[in-house]
Length: 332
Image (cartoon, helix red, strand yellow):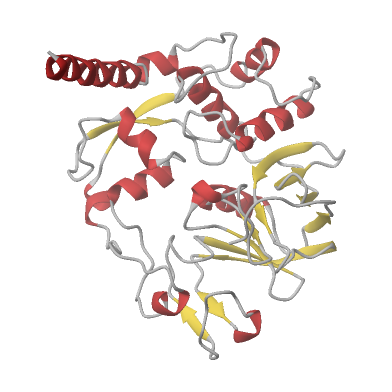
């Protein structure tokens, strides 16, 4: 009898998990409406809000359909830019304003291409920088990682949206976010790096944010710079050059080395070089850690946010560092 009850309990648990997963699909997310109360787990309303924020360039970072600090900060930034109470809470007024930014479906379909499947992948990437330097390319590990990054989502959410896909065959149809961000702002005047909020803001001539991205910014060991700087150049698909004077924790060699190009390179898919020597704004191989950890002094964004910013800036664009009063978190 006890064994029977145990079997029934396990079956019910799987059934509940399946019911929760079934709520996250193209229809439930596209048709999601505002509702009161704090969502639990992966939620259609939250997922829709994250995609709308991403499209509006108030980036929540990695889209995963869950409550997070990056989501709260993105909501607060969107509220401030739209004259609403900036408390970071998804209220009905905020939802209505956000929903008005895009009338189309936030989830769409995408067919895996032969190019997606046959790209040269780097299946195993070591954790240590010295060992990375032995690889010829720091590419994506597999199709799933590549597509998750293309559509700004966590791999877990991509699997949840496509439970029957193995992400291996061309011409397979997937459900993905529509993360097209539309036309670029035409009146960018400067970039602000806010160390306290761990955000990078693109400002218009009036000082109003027209794009906001979560960021990992320096650490106590390797702090980000202060004061004013400017963009010197933009390098896409950069290599990474390690200088022993950096003295990064865990790096034992006393000789300089270079790590090959690729989205899983330590500086990701783009490097925005600043006028302060050795400092830049760049991408990352680990988008899930953006905004929750520190960096080795530079300003780290998700690859897609770094690429978006790279298109907007040019040599001479002003970059102002806004100093913080306290830090918490974990350096990496």
